[in-house]
Length: 511
Image (cartoon, rainbow, N blue to C red; front, side, top):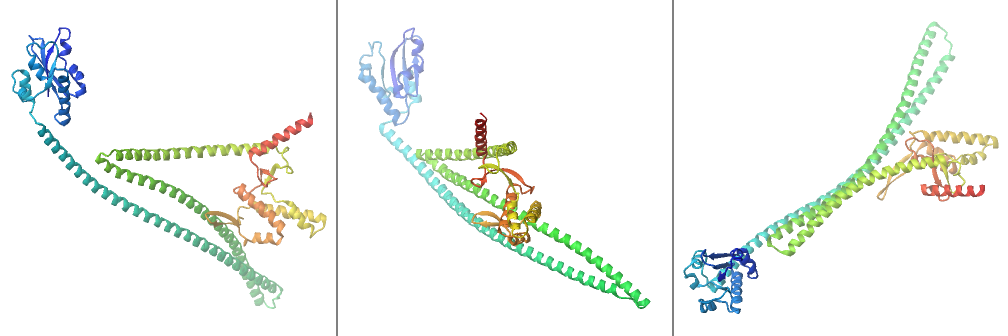
């Protein structure tokens, strides 16, 4: 503690001199804790006790406090020498044993609140505090190391479990792909077997029907010589008619069953293809989600470890924790932003796609006369068979007049086949990581097309692929903007630019 004496108070400054805040501010450089002022009501001179920290730093501040007065010759020795005529200046020093024994309010306060300590006592107390702190810190470090080792073990265990789970997922995916291929192979074999059985049954029915017809003709040619023979003949005819009717009904039912089986087979095939696409799509989304969850889990694990390291009051560890917290928040915010952006983009994509489709329809309808088939950009009827291939083939077999009729007839017949939704000679195959749709070469109509020549086969298959791509549900011919120069679907930008160019040329010709 420090002692300040000879505080002379003028009437105008008395209030501020008695305020401890004034002295705290005045001696702020020495970091005092509090100031207690002692003043007699009948005396204009006050005294004060300046209290410092009880540790080594407080002792050093008190020493500097005392030296500041001694350098100005206002220390304890100076006060004792000039006590009778001190003047108006204040004097100050550090409280010692003799001050503790003095009479008056200052001595009473020192005896009540103060505690005499030597420098060796301060050093000893400081060492004890340091030893206590070091012991506590060592205990905390040991506990933190134990927690860290436990967290590291759990992290390694979870990481190993995650690796095993990923390996199991890959194994299941490989097994799923193999099982899918096996199911597709069995499905094709079953379809082939069913078709063969149906063909054999149909052949047997036709054979039996022919035999019954021959038998019926033979019975009609016979002449009954006796009544019994005529009755027997009538009975045979009746049985024959019943048998014939039964066979006809069986043939009709067999035909219906064949159609139903084919339709069910095609529906099953389409459903399997759609399910396979959905499963592959879900797999991609699941892989992306698992990857993101793994990154977040890894980051959270590291952050948990860094939190336990933070008990050691290490500034570098705290800074690393803050950086990892910020990184985790950024990742979560980025994930939310990406999900919102993905939803917005999907909605905008649908709106834009609808607007583009409407624009294409309006452009096709409005520029039928301007954009012809002989221009670079024009209107192509997707799914319409090129009759020239039939004309070229028929010219080699028929006279010119008959060739034209045959070409139109055959072309119209195959155009009707294309409209039939039950005829879908396509199959799905896996090429690497992509799925492709190819023609089933074993299809009966496809075989029939090949027999008619490569030119007709190419024309009909091209129209079939166009319908399958541009109008698979309706299976009717639609108009489409087409870039005849590059053999592809024209963009709106190309069509509009070409139309504007033609309109400009027409205006120039008129002027």
